[in-house]
Figure 1 (cartoon, rainbow, N blue to C red):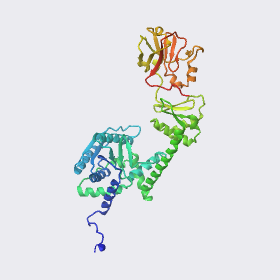
Figure 2: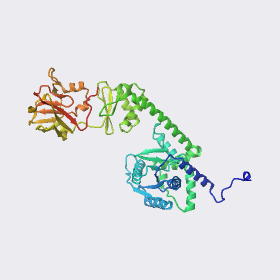
Figure 3: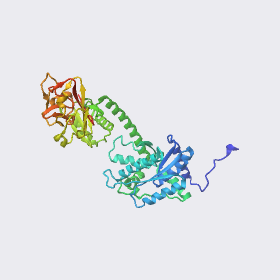
Figure 4: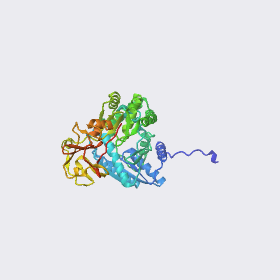
Length: 478
Protein backbone atom coordinates (compact mmCIF):
# COMPACT_ATOMS: atom_id res chain seq x y z
CA UNK A 1 0.00 0.00 0.00
CA UNK A 2 1.09 3.51 -0.69
CA UNK A 3 0.79 4.50 2.96
CA UNK A 4 3.28 1.83 3.99
CA UNK A 5 6.03 2.86 1.61
CA UNK A 6 9.22 4.03 3.23
CA UNK A 7 10.80 7.32 2.13
CA UNK A 8 13.21 6.80 -0.72
CA UNK A 9 16.85 7.01 0.24
CA UNK A 10 19.48 8.90 -1.72
CA UNK A 11 21.66 6.93 -4.04
CA UNK A 12 24.73 5.70 -2.09
CA UNK A 13 26.95 7.73 -4.42
CA UNK A 14 25.08 10.97 -3.77
CA UNK A 15 26.75 13.60 -1.60
CA UNK A 16 23.88 14.32 0.80
CA UNK A 17 25.53 17.47 2.21
CA UNK A 18 26.04 18.85 -1.30
CA UNK A 19 22.47 18.00 -2.26
CA UNK A 20 21.13 19.79 0.80
CA UNK A 21 23.40 22.78 0.12
CA UNK A 22 22.17 22.93 -3.48
CA UNK A 23 18.56 23.05 -2.30
CA UNK A 24 19.35 25.84 0.16
CA UNK A 25 21.09 27.88 -2.52
CA UNK A 26 18.15 27.42 -4.90
CA UNK A 27 15.64 28.40 -2.23
CA UNK A 28 17.53 31.59 -1.41
CA UNK A 29 17.58 32.58 -5.09
CA UNK A 30 13.88 31.87 -5.50
CA UNK A 31 13.16 34.16 -2.54
CA UNK A 32 14.75 37.14 -4.33
CA UNK A 33 12.61 40.20 -5.10
CA UNK A 34 11.09 40.49 -8.57
CA UNK A 35 13.64 40.81 -11.39
CA UNK A 36 12.42 41.63 -14.88
CA UNK A 37 14.11 41.26 -18.25
CA UNK A 38 17.82 40.72 -17.69
CA UNK A 39 20.02 40.06 -14.68
CA UNK A 40 23.76 39.90 -14.12
CA UNK A 41 26.13 37.96 -11.87
CA UNK A 42 29.41 39.43 -10.64
CA UNK A 43 31.87 36.63 -11.40
CA UNK A 44 35.41 36.69 -10.03
CA UNK A 45 35.76 32.96 -10.85
CA UNK A 46 36.36 32.18 -7.17
CA UNK A 47 34.24 29.43 -5.56
CA UNK A 48 31.56 31.76 -4.17
CA UNK A 49 30.84 33.69 -7.37
CA UNK A 50 31.28 30.56 -9.53
CA UNK A 51 28.65 28.76 -7.44
CA UNK A 52 26.36 31.77 -7.81
CA UNK A 53 26.82 31.76 -11.57
CA UNK A 54 25.95 28.05 -11.77
CA UNK A 55 22.86 28.31 -9.56
CA UNK A 56 21.76 31.64 -11.04
CA UNK A 57 21.83 30.07 -14.52
CA UNK A 58 19.25 27.53 -13.33
CA UNK A 59 17.28 30.25 -11.50
CA UNK A 60 17.20 32.49 -14.59
CA UNK A 61 16.01 29.60 -16.74
CA UNK A 62 13.17 28.90 -14.28
CA UNK A 63 12.10 32.54 -14.43
CA UNK A 64 12.65 33.04 -18.15
CA UNK A 65 15.35 35.68 -17.62
CA UNK A 66 18.37 36.53 -19.75
CA UNK A 67 21.48 36.22 -17.56
CA UNK A 68 24.86 37.93 -18.04
CA UNK A 69 28.14 37.23 -16.27
CA UNK A 70 30.28 40.28 -15.38
CA UNK A 71 34.00 39.83 -14.71
CA UNK A 72 36.27 42.61 -13.40
CA UNK A 73 40.01 42.29 -14.08
CA UNK A 74 41.75 44.26 -11.29
CA UNK A 75 45.30 43.54 -12.42
CA UNK A 76 46.42 43.29 -8.80
CA UNK A 77 47.68 39.71 -8.95
CA UNK A 78 50.06 37.89 -11.26
CA UNK A 79 47.34 35.30 -12.04
CA UNK A 80 44.66 37.88 -12.94
CA UNK A 81 44.77 36.91 -16.64
CA UNK A 82 44.34 33.24 -15.75
CA UNK A 83 41.35 34.10 -13.55
CA UNK A 84 39.76 35.89 -16.50
CA UNK A 85 40.29 32.78 -18.64
CA UNK A 86 38.62 30.68 -15.94
CA UNK A 87 35.63 33.05 -15.93
CA UNK A 88 35.29 32.65 -19.71
CA UNK A 89 35.55 28.87 -19.30
CA UNK A 90 32.65 28.81 -16.85
CA UNK A 91 30.56 31.12 -19.03
CA UNK A 92 31.11 28.75 -21.97
CA UNK A 93 30.12 25.73 -19.85
CA UNK A 94 26.92 27.47 -18.79
CA UNK A 95 26.17 28.89 -22.24
CA UNK A 96 26.01 32.43 -20.88
CA UNK A 97 27.39 35.69 -22.29
CA UNK A 98 30.25 37.25 -20.31
CA UNK A 99 31.30 40.90 -20.23
CA UNK A 100 34.76 41.78 -18.95
CA UNK A 101 36.21 45.11 -17.82
CA UNK A 102 39.83 45.89 -16.89
CA UNK A 103 40.28 48.50 -14.17
CA UNK A 104 43.23 50.33 -12.66
CA UNK A 105 43.54 50.32 -8.88
CA UNK A 106 45.95 52.77 -7.29
CA UNK A 107 47.89 50.84 -4.61
CA UNK A 108 48.65 54.17 -2.88
CA UNK A 109 45.02 55.32 -2.69
CA UNK A 110 44.52 57.16 0.65
CA UNK A 111 41.40 55.06 1.32
CA UNK A 112 43.46 51.85 1.12
CA UNK A 113 43.88 49.34 -1.67
CA UNK A 114 40.88 47.24 -0.57
CA UNK A 115 38.52 50.22 -0.65
CA UNK A 116 39.99 51.44 -3.95
CA UNK A 117 39.55 47.99 -5.53
CA UNK A 118 35.97 47.80 -4.26
CA UNK A 119 35.06 51.20 -5.73
CA UNK A 120 36.70 50.31 -9.05
CA UNK A 121 34.80 47.01 -9.10
CA UNK A 122 31.42 48.67 -8.53
CA UNK A 123 32.11 51.28 -11.20
CA UNK A 124 32.99 48.55 -13.68
CA UNK A 125 29.92 46.48 -12.77
CA UNK A 126 27.68 49.52 -13.24
CA UNK A 127 29.24 50.28 -16.64
CA UNK A 128 28.76 46.70 -17.85
CA UNK A 129 25.21 46.61 -16.50
CA UNK A 130 24.30 49.79 -18.38
CA UNK A 131 25.92 48.56 -21.59
CA UNK A 132 24.00 45.26 -21.48
CA UNK A 133 20.68 46.68 -20.28
CA UNK A 134 20.87 44.94 -16.92
CA UNK A 135 19.40 46.69 -13.87
CA UNK A 136 19.89 43.94 -11.25
CA UNK A 137 23.30 42.41 -10.45
CA UNK A 138 23.62 39.40 -8.15
CA UNK A 139 26.53 39.32 -5.69
CA UNK A 140 27.83 36.20 -3.92
CA UNK A 141 28.23 37.70 -0.44
CA UNK A 142 27.36 35.18 2.28
CA UNK A 143 27.02 34.92 6.04
CA UNK A 144 30.79 34.72 6.59
CA UNK A 145 31.27 37.92 4.58
CA UNK A 146 28.59 39.58 6.66
CA UNK A 147 30.30 38.57 9.91
CA UNK A 148 33.64 39.89 8.64
CA UNK A 149 32.07 43.18 7.60
CA UNK A 150 30.43 43.66 11.00
CA UNK A 151 33.68 42.94 12.84
CA UNK A 152 35.72 45.25 10.62
CA UNK A 153 33.25 48.11 11.04
CA UNK A 154 33.13 47.53 14.78
CA UNK A 155 36.93 47.64 14.99
CA UNK A 156 36.96 50.84 12.92
CA UNK A 157 34.58 52.53 15.34
CA UNK A 158 31.39 52.63 13.27
CA UNK A 159 28.19 53.77 14.96
CA UNK A 160 24.74 52.14 14.63
CA UNK A 161 24.32 53.58 11.13
CA UNK A 162 27.47 51.83 9.94
CA UNK A 163 26.91 48.59 11.82
CA UNK A 164 23.96 47.56 9.67
CA UNK A 165 26.56 45.92 7.41
CA UNK A 166 25.44 44.59 4.03
CA UNK A 167 21.81 44.64 2.97
CA UNK A 168 20.04 42.00 0.92
CA UNK A 169 19.21 44.65 -1.69
CA UNK A 170 20.97 47.96 -2.31
CA UNK A 171 21.14 50.57 -5.07
CA UNK A 172 24.32 52.22 -6.30
CA UNK A 173 24.69 54.39 -9.41
CA UNK A 174 21.19 53.38 -10.52
CA UNK A 175 21.92 49.62 -10.38
CA UNK A 176 20.18 47.15 -8.05
CA UNK A 177 22.56 44.81 -6.22
CA UNK A 178 21.00 41.64 -4.83
CA UNK A 179 22.71 39.37 -2.28
CA UNK A 180 20.64 36.19 -2.14
CA UNK A 181 23.04 34.21 0.07
CA UNK A 182 23.65 36.64 2.94
CA UNK A 183 21.98 34.29 5.42
CA UNK A 184 23.89 31.18 4.28
CA UNK A 185 27.30 30.17 5.67
CA UNK A 186 30.11 29.74 3.18
CA UNK A 187 30.40 26.06 4.08
CA UNK A 188 27.15 25.40 2.18
CA UNK A 189 28.47 27.13 -0.92
CA UNK A 190 31.77 25.24 -0.77
CA UNK A 191 29.94 21.91 -0.33
CA UNK A 192 27.93 22.56 -3.48
CA UNK A 193 30.97 23.80 -5.42
CA UNK A 194 33.06 20.78 -4.38
CA UNK A 195 30.40 18.45 -5.77
CA UNK A 196 30.07 20.53 -8.95
CA UNK A 197 33.83 20.44 -9.52
CA UNK A 198 33.94 16.67 -8.97
CA UNK A 199 31.11 16.21 -11.48
CA UNK A 200 32.28 18.62 -14.20
CA UNK A 201 36.02 19.03 -13.71
CA UNK A 202 35.72 22.83 -13.39
CA UNK A 203 38.00 24.25 -10.70
CA UNK A 204 37.30 27.68 -9.23
CA UNK A 205 40.29 29.97 -8.71
CA UNK A 206 41.77 30.60 -5.28
CA UNK A 207 42.78 34.19 -4.50
CA UNK A 208 45.78 34.14 -2.12
CA UNK A 209 44.99 37.69 -0.98
CA UNK A 210 41.98 36.30 0.91
CA UNK A 211 44.39 35.11 3.60
CA UNK A 212 47.05 37.79 3.09
CA UNK A 213 47.87 39.40 6.45
CA UNK A 214 48.64 42.69 4.66
CA UNK A 215 44.91 43.18 4.28
CA UNK A 216 42.38 43.60 7.08
CA UNK A 217 40.09 40.82 5.85
CA UNK A 218 43.07 38.54 5.37
CA UNK A 219 44.03 38.95 9.05
CA UNK A 220 40.48 38.19 10.13
CA UNK A 221 40.20 35.07 7.98
CA UNK A 222 43.64 33.68 8.75
CA UNK A 223 44.04 34.51 12.43
CA UNK A 224 41.08 36.08 14.20
CA UNK A 225 38.01 34.19 13.00
CA UNK A 226 39.43 30.67 13.47
CA UNK A 227 40.14 31.55 17.12
CA UNK A 228 36.65 32.99 17.57
CA UNK A 229 35.04 29.93 15.99
CA UNK A 230 36.80 27.59 18.40
CA UNK A 231 35.09 29.28 21.35
CA UNK A 232 31.92 30.71 19.72
CA UNK A 233 31.01 28.47 16.77
CA UNK A 234 27.73 30.34 16.26
CA UNK A 235 29.41 33.74 15.91
CA UNK A 236 28.28 34.23 12.30
CA UNK A 237 24.59 34.18 13.14
CA UNK A 238 25.21 36.25 16.27
CA UNK A 239 26.97 38.99 14.32
CA UNK A 240 24.32 38.88 11.60
CA UNK A 241 21.63 39.34 14.23
CA UNK A 242 23.60 42.22 15.74
CA UNK A 243 23.87 43.85 12.31
CA UNK A 244 20.11 43.59 11.74
CA UNK A 245 19.36 45.08 15.17
CA UNK A 246 21.85 47.87 14.52
CA UNK A 247 20.12 48.62 11.23
CA UNK A 248 16.77 48.83 13.04
CA UNK A 249 18.25 51.14 15.69
CA UNK A 250 19.86 53.29 12.99
CA UNK A 251 16.53 53.58 11.16
CA UNK A 252 14.84 54.74 14.38
CA UNK A 253 17.60 57.29 15.04
CA UNK A 254 17.26 58.60 11.48
CA UNK A 255 13.53 59.13 12.04
CA UNK A 256 14.24 61.13 15.20
CA UNK A 257 16.96 63.14 13.44
CA UNK A 258 14.70 63.79 10.44
CA UNK A 259 11.92 65.11 12.68
CA UNK A 260 14.40 67.35 14.52
CA UNK A 261 15.86 68.58 11.22
CA UNK A 262 12.49 69.41 9.68
CA UNK A 263 11.64 71.49 12.75
CA UNK A 264 14.73 73.73 12.51
CA UNK A 265 15.60 73.99 8.80
CA UNK A 266 14.22 76.42 6.25
CA UNK A 267 15.01 77.18 2.60
CA UNK A 268 17.59 79.91 2.06
CA UNK A 269 18.36 80.17 -1.68
CA UNK A 270 20.87 79.61 -3.10
CA UNK A 271 22.16 77.49 -0.23
CA UNK A 272 19.32 75.00 -0.09
CA UNK A 273 18.12 74.42 3.45
CA UNK A 274 19.74 76.41 6.26
CA UNK A 275 19.63 75.54 9.96
CA UNK A 276 18.27 77.87 12.59
CA UNK A 277 21.09 77.93 15.10
CA UNK A 278 18.84 78.74 18.04
CA UNK A 279 16.77 75.62 17.30
CA UNK A 280 19.86 73.47 16.84
CA UNK A 281 21.36 74.56 20.14
CA UNK A 282 18.16 73.72 22.03
CA UNK A 283 18.65 70.05 21.17
CA UNK A 284 20.56 67.65 23.39
CA UNK A 285 24.19 67.19 22.22
CA UNK A 286 23.63 63.71 20.77
CA UNK A 287 20.56 64.82 18.80
CA UNK A 288 22.42 67.94 17.66
CA UNK A 289 25.19 65.78 16.20
CA UNK A 290 22.67 63.51 14.45
CA UNK A 291 20.90 66.51 12.91
CA UNK A 292 24.20 67.95 11.64
CA UNK A 293 25.13 64.62 10.04
CA UNK A 294 21.74 64.36 8.32
CA UNK A 295 21.76 68.01 7.22
CA UNK A 296 25.28 67.73 5.77
CA UNK A 297 24.29 64.55 3.93
CA UNK A 298 21.40 66.49 2.37
CA UNK A 299 24.00 68.85 0.92
CA UNK A 300 26.07 65.92 -0.45
CA UNK A 301 28.76 66.58 2.15
CA UNK A 302 30.56 63.53 3.55
CA UNK A 303 29.96 63.01 7.25
CA UNK A 304 32.88 64.41 9.26
CA UNK A 305 34.81 62.17 11.68
CA UNK A 306 33.39 62.04 15.19
CA UNK A 307 36.03 64.38 16.67
CA UNK A 308 35.49 66.89 13.86
CA UNK A 309 31.72 66.73 14.32
CA UNK A 310 32.03 67.33 18.07
CA UNK A 311 34.20 70.38 17.36
CA UNK A 312 31.63 71.72 14.91
CA UNK A 313 28.88 71.28 17.52
CA UNK A 314 31.01 73.04 20.15
CA UNK A 315 31.89 76.00 17.95
CA UNK A 316 28.32 76.48 16.79
CA UNK A 317 27.15 76.45 20.40
CA UNK A 318 29.86 78.66 21.89
CA UNK A 319 30.36 81.26 19.14
CA UNK A 320 29.38 84.79 20.15
CA UNK A 321 26.15 86.06 18.62
CA UNK A 322 27.94 88.63 16.44
CA UNK A 323 30.64 86.24 15.23
CA UNK A 324 30.39 85.03 11.64
CA UNK A 325 31.67 81.51 12.04
CA UNK A 326 33.46 79.64 9.24
CA UNK A 327 34.13 75.89 9.47
CA UNK A 328 35.88 74.25 6.53
CA UNK A 329 35.02 70.67 5.66
CA UNK A 330 36.56 69.31 2.47
CA UNK A 331 35.80 71.72 -0.37
CA UNK A 332 32.78 73.19 1.44
CA UNK A 333 32.39 75.83 4.11
CA UNK A 334 29.87 75.62 6.93
CA UNK A 335 29.07 79.26 7.65
CA UNK A 336 27.07 80.95 10.37
CA UNK A 337 25.40 84.34 9.92
CA UNK A 338 23.16 85.59 12.69
CA UNK A 339 20.74 82.72 13.45
CA UNK A 340 21.43 80.68 10.32
CA UNK A 341 23.95 77.99 9.44
CA UNK A 342 24.51 77.28 5.74
CA UNK A 343 26.73 75.16 3.49
CA UNK A 344 28.66 77.25 0.98
CA UNK A 345 30.69 75.79 -1.87
CA UNK A 346 32.11 78.98 -3.42
CA UNK A 347 35.14 81.07 -2.62
CA UNK A 348 35.19 84.86 -2.74
CA UNK A 349 36.26 86.65 -5.90
CA UNK A 350 39.87 86.08 -7.06
CA UNK A 351 42.24 88.76 -5.64
CA UNK A 352 43.37 89.81 -9.14
CA UNK A 353 39.81 90.74 -10.11
CA UNK A 354 39.24 92.49 -6.77
CA UNK A 355 42.27 94.70 -7.32
CA UNK A 356 41.96 95.58 -11.01
CA UNK A 357 38.30 95.42 -11.83
CA UNK A 358 36.95 95.51 -15.40
CA UNK A 359 36.87 98.67 -17.54
CA UNK A 360 34.29 99.09 -20.32
CA UNK A 361 31.98 101.57 -22.08
CA UNK A 362 28.20 101.49 -22.50
CA UNK A 363 26.90 102.36 -25.97
CA UNK A 364 23.20 101.92 -25.23
CA UNK A 365 22.94 98.10 -25.38
CA UNK A 366 20.44 96.45 -22.98
CA UNK A 367 23.16 94.47 -21.17
CA UNK A 368 26.90 93.91 -21.04
CA UNK A 369 28.45 90.56 -20.26
CA UNK A 370 31.43 90.86 -17.87
CA UNK A 371 33.12 87.47 -18.02
CA UNK A 372 35.87 88.31 -15.52
CA UNK A 373 33.24 89.27 -12.96
CA UNK A 374 31.11 86.15 -13.61
CA UNK A 375 27.95 88.05 -14.43
CA UNK A 376 25.98 90.45 -16.61
CA UNK A 377 25.19 94.12 -16.00
CA UNK A 378 21.67 95.01 -17.21
CA UNK A 379 20.69 98.55 -18.34
CA UNK A 380 16.89 98.50 -18.06
CA UNK A 381 14.85 101.44 -19.39
CA UNK A 382 12.47 102.84 -16.76
CA UNK A 383 10.01 105.76 -16.63
CA UNK A 384 12.50 107.58 -14.41
CA UNK A 385 16.10 106.68 -13.60
CA UNK A 386 19.77 107.50 -14.19
CA UNK A 387 20.32 109.87 -17.09
CA UNK A 388 21.41 107.66 -20.05
CA UNK A 389 23.52 110.48 -21.52
CA UNK A 390 25.55 110.64 -18.28
CA UNK A 391 26.39 106.91 -18.53
CA UNK A 392 26.80 106.56 -22.29
CA UNK A 393 30.24 106.37 -23.94
CA UNK A 394 32.20 107.17 -20.83
CA UNK A 395 34.69 105.10 -18.89
CA UNK A 396 32.94 102.67 -16.49
CA UNK A 397 34.64 100.24 -14.12
CA UNK A 398 33.15 97.23 -12.33
CA UNK A 399 35.20 96.02 -9.38
CA UNK A 400 34.96 94.37 -5.97
CA UNK A 401 34.83 96.22 -2.68
CA UNK A 402 38.00 97.70 -1.22
CA UNK A 403 36.51 99.04 2.01
CA UNK A 404 35.13 102.37 3.28
CA UNK A 405 32.83 102.88 0.27
CA UNK A 406 29.72 105.00 0.85
CA UNK A 407 26.36 105.18 -0.92
CA UNK A 408 23.31 107.42 -0.62
CA UNK A 409 20.31 105.13 -1.17
CA UNK A 410 17.59 107.83 -0.85
CA UNK A 411 17.44 111.47 -1.85
CA UNK A 412 16.45 112.55 1.68
CA UNK A 413 19.01 110.51 3.61
CA UNK A 414 22.76 110.90 4.09
CA UNK A 415 25.41 108.76 2.47
CA UNK A 416 26.28 105.71 4.53
CA UNK A 417 28.97 103.05 4.54
CA UNK A 418 28.31 99.99 2.43
CA UNK A 419 29.14 97.84 5.44
CA UNK A 420 26.22 99.28 7.43
CA UNK A 421 23.86 99.17 4.47
CA UNK A 422 24.69 95.53 3.76
CA UNK A 423 24.25 94.66 7.43
CA UNK A 424 20.82 96.28 7.48
CA UNK A 425 19.92 94.47 4.31
CA UNK A 426 20.91 91.19 5.99
CA UNK A 427 23.49 90.21 3.36
CA UNK A 428 26.19 87.94 4.85
CA UNK A 429 29.75 89.23 4.89
CA UNK A 430 31.09 86.55 2.53
CA UNK A 431 28.43 87.46 -0.05
CA UNK A 432 29.34 91.15 0.20
CA UNK A 433 32.81 90.28 -1.07
CA UNK A 434 31.22 88.79 -4.19
CA UNK A 435 28.91 91.72 -4.96
CA UNK A 436 30.57 94.12 -7.45
CA UNK A 437 30.49 97.93 -7.52
CA UNK A 438 30.08 100.10 -10.64
CA UNK A 439 32.11 103.34 -10.94
CA UNK A 440 32.09 106.24 -13.40
CA UNK A 441 35.56 107.60 -12.87
CA UNK A 442 35.80 107.95 -9.08
CA UNK A 443 32.04 108.19 -8.56
CA UNK A 444 30.33 105.11 -7.11
CA UNK A 445 27.31 104.64 -9.37
CA UNK A 446 25.80 101.32 -8.24
CA UNK A 447 26.34 98.67 -5.57
CA UNK A 448 24.97 95.20 -6.38
CA UNK A 449 22.48 94.13 -3.73
CA UNK A 450 21.73 97.75 -2.73
CA UNK A 451 21.04 99.85 -5.83
CA UNK A 452 22.20 103.09 -7.43
CA UNK A 453 23.31 106.26 -5.64
CA UNK A 454 20.40 108.70 -5.27
CA UNK A 455 22.62 111.71 -6.13
CA UNK A 456 23.21 110.69 -9.76
CA UNK A 457 21.78 112.80 -12.62
CA UNK A 458 18.20 111.71 -13.34
CA UNK A 459 16.16 111.68 -16.54
CA UNK A 460 12.81 110.49 -17.86
CA UNK A 461 12.99 107.92 -19.29
CA UNK A 462 16.02 106.73 -17.37
CA UNK A 463 18.15 103.69 -16.64
CA UNK A 464 17.80 101.19 -13.82
CA UNK A 465 20.93 99.08 -13.26
CA UNK A 466 20.74 95.42 -12.27
CA UNK A 467 23.54 92.93 -11.63
CA UNK A 468 22.81 89.31 -12.65
CA UNK A 469 25.56 87.00 -11.37
CA UNK A 470 26.22 83.61 -12.94
CA UNK A 471 26.03 82.05 -9.48
CA UNK A 472 23.50 84.02 -7.44
CA UNK A 473 24.29 84.39 -3.76
CA UNK A 474 22.11 85.30 -0.83
CA UNK A 475 20.66 88.80 -1.15
CA UNK A 476 18.90 88.63 2.21
CA UNK A 477 19.51 86.45 5.26
CA UNK A 478 17.81 88.00 8.27
